Image 1: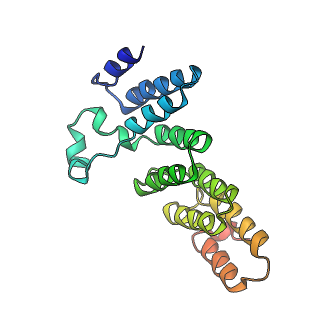
Image 2: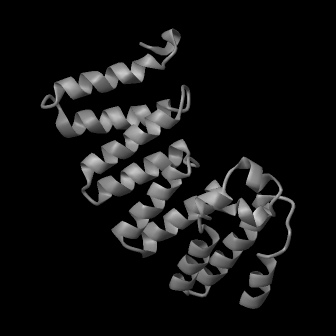
Image 3: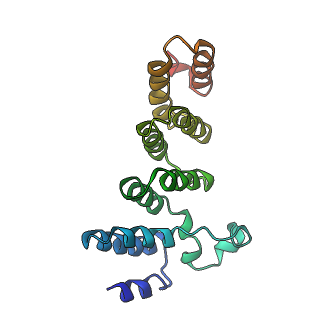
Length: 182
């Protein structure tokens, strides 16, 4: 099956989604066989980021879908999820950092990353993840990041960091339409 799947990853698919489905299916097959390291290796290979010289809209426009696979959000999300379950803190953090670096993060991935960091008692890093997330999104999508961020910040620091809390609330209201700023 692995030989067939390896060949399938080289097929000139029409969409990146189709190619990602092959890689995801391969990783899931490894998981069903309880070959956890192989599943991680499959996803690590699928998410290899090409050198900067080979990236960019012009270069990727005429290239096969394999050249654009590294920007597939669902594939990266699956990889991050597996990393959380099977790998250590550093590997998982590195995966989430790459997702942010590629700017393919979703509000849900921001929340997952912050929760992961919080779970490992890295509270300031979790707040930094929220900060990165609120910069990347506009209203109304950023709302699903601001609400947990502000809630967790106030719960953690209460009245000890009033100036920072005030700044955060002001920041949250800046991009918010007047009708919803209540």
